[in-house]
Image 1 (cartoon, rainbow, N blue to C red):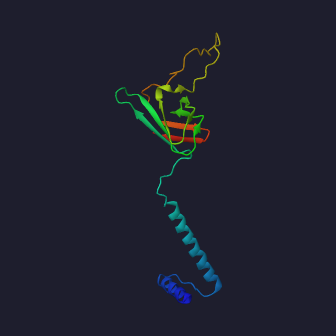
Image 2 (cartoon, helix red, strand yellow):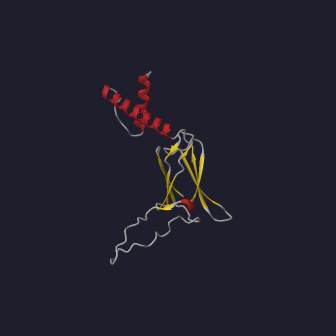
Image 3 (cartoon, helix red, strand yellow):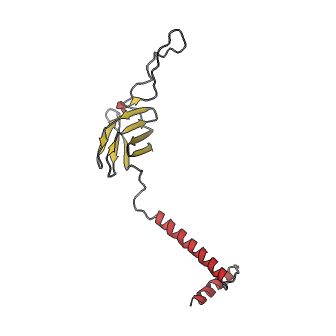
Amino acid sequence: MSGSVLQQVQKHLGDLGINFSLTGRYARQKLTVIGGYVLASLLTVGWAFSSSQPLANAIGASIEAQVIPSTGEQWILLRNNSSDNWSDVRLLLNDRYLFIGPESVTAGESARVFVKDFDYLLYVPRARHFGTLEDTSEEPPQPKASATLKPTSLTLSCDQGFHTIAF
C-alpha cells in the first residue's frame, strides 16, 4: 500500500513538473526528512499561536495611568497579577522621576501612586565653588513631579524583576 501512495505522490509531482525517482533508499529518506521538517514546522507554529491568554510580562504587572477629572491630577495604578509578592518596589516615571515604595505589593493586590509623589532623579547637588563657573546653587528644575505631569513611560522594578510600559 505504501508503494501505491508513493507512486501517487510521484505522479502528482510529475504533473507539476517535479521529476524525481522515489525508488531507492536515498530518495525515500529525503522525502521522509522533508516531510518530517514540514510537520514539525506546522506543529511549532500551531503551538506558538494556540495560547488563549495574551503574553504576559515576567513579573505579572498590570500598569494603568489614570486622571482625576475634577483636578486633572495623574495617578498610576499597579496590579500584581502574579503569585509572588513584590518587594523593594521602585518606579521610574518618564526616565526622570523616581518613586521608592510601596514596601511590598502582595500577590493579587493593587497599589496606587500619585504622580506628584515622584522625586526628580537626575539632580545631583554639588559643592559650591566660589569664584568659578561651577556655581551650582540652583535648585533642580522641579524637585517633585507636577501633579498634572502626563506619564509617557514607567519602569517598575522590584526584587522579582522589572517591567517597562509606554503609555
